[in-house]
Length: 353
Image 1 (cartoon, rainbow, N blue to C red):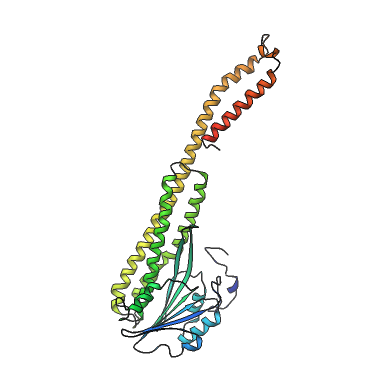
Image 2 (image 1 turned 180 degrees about the vertical axis):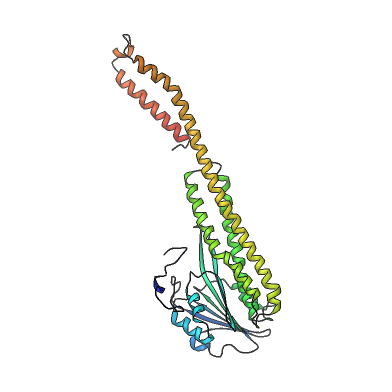
């Protein structure tokens, strides 16, 4: 499956809004869990489709976490419970969906990506995260179970900060803020890889080209998934639904937009840096090739007149001492092999091949 654009064979010819999972199954089954809280009380429990009825109650915020997207029937039933538009559900099931903001009359759908940079393989991995936000409830959809929300869960359980005193709109902001924070952390890790390569390019080797092209692919994947986030946050700021408070809209979301801008700026800086490294690599390799050619030209310049003289006069003189020497032929081969071996050793030491 292509990394930058996943196959759409499954949805080819289907009607808009058809619920078809597009992606790779990341876990055996869909897992549903619920956290319900207010300033004085919190409860956390596992649930299933039949248990969704009556979960959302007044005076409490309900957060339903859906982990696993491959079961389209489960996603369809969740959509029916919360009256989600079919086109929005289609985007939630499409793990290649570009980050976007979808506004309905009484709910919002926010689609983003979670990113993780593997320090060992130097590769970037992403999962789709979708948020269904309504009055007093939030439903989060993930491709797999992860520890992505551990900090949020800790703040809820220990009543740290204001998160237990505010509504579902602040919870959505907190989840988005966690995602954007993870972008910056992973960009920083990736940045160390890019910056550490600069000193090595002073004396470039062939394997550096592979590293540069790999870094270019990873930073391009970063750009694809993170650049649209600024647009998502901006549209969230401008929404006029009643359950998004003025405080979240005027204070917290602008701060999130600044954080997203910082992540995007860092990506652009490293994208330019990788492009510059490729130019430096090519320039240094060309200079290295020119140095090799300069040495070989000197060798050629020395031997050209000698070859010319030998070509004109040959070695057919009447008195050539080696002609009568018994081992002249073998001695000539020995000298030729020694000269060739010495030149090969010299070229190898200079890393010319």
